[in-house]
Length: 227
Ligand SMILES: *Cc1c(COP(=O)(O)O)cnc(C)c1O
Image (cartoon, rainbow, N blue to C red):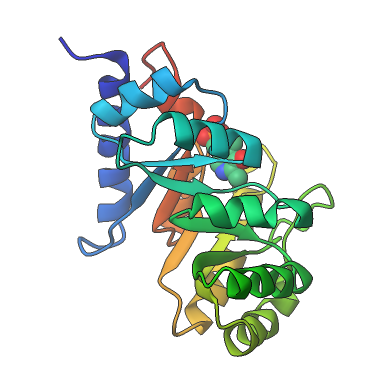
């Protein structure tokens, strides 16, 4: 019999398959399982069900969980806001991808510390495309310039693309608008290959708008099977 997590994964695959085929059969979508509310045992169970990329939003959590699970070849993503005094901690964890680089100032600071440790980090620039004050990220008008600035001046940051969090709204059109704004900027960046958009409640909309990496937490870790 399948475990609940296997069923959750199967249901997610099925929904993604539909959403991505509406784009193109060449449109591939990566899943990052956001484990911020989950224990290491739950992560292990989902890993055994076939999920290999996991994401956390707090430095102390990614540090602890990646250490406890260091026998598994999990790809760890960091999706939370990074305080300057935690930069070295993140560098030492050596994440697969840092999704939430949200200011030029942070980029310069991160690059400086990466150079000292002789490390390279793959990052996404976070865009505040919902224009919500509670959200961090670069304002859409400044993204292109900031992106170029980092590419030119921060040689130890390997920028791979953009990330955004969909508008916090019940109105699907508002959510779609925030994704479309991000996609439009992404299309102008010839070197970008990753567009990280979409969570449990809005990943289908995000894929429709061109997302190729979704960050799904509650839908994967729920104990009840929801379709
Ligand atoms: C928590 C979180 C997610 C996942 O949210 P769910 O609604 O549980 O899928 C995705 N991205 C970020 C940045 C998060 O903090």
